Image (cartoon, one colour):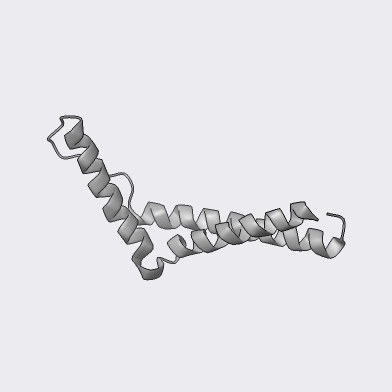
Amino acid sequence: MFFSYFLLLFGLAGAVAGGWFALNIRGAAAAYEAYSAKNTELRAHAAGRLDVTPNVWTAKVARILGTIVGLCGAVLVLAAIALILEGTA
């Protein structure tokens, strides 16, 4: 029984966090893109590189990864519900 609640807890967390980025709620993906760009620039300056550094983390990448995490979380929630209804876990 503990395992199914464990799956349910982490599945819900994954579905909510993934959905937050996938749907770009309150600009989460765009804000993370700006944070990543600033962090990349600061790390380059700390390393002594003063040229323009490419930012590989875009809002599109964040939304795609958020979709994947959200879907995996939904699968975990469905597995937990199936285990709870079956009564074996």
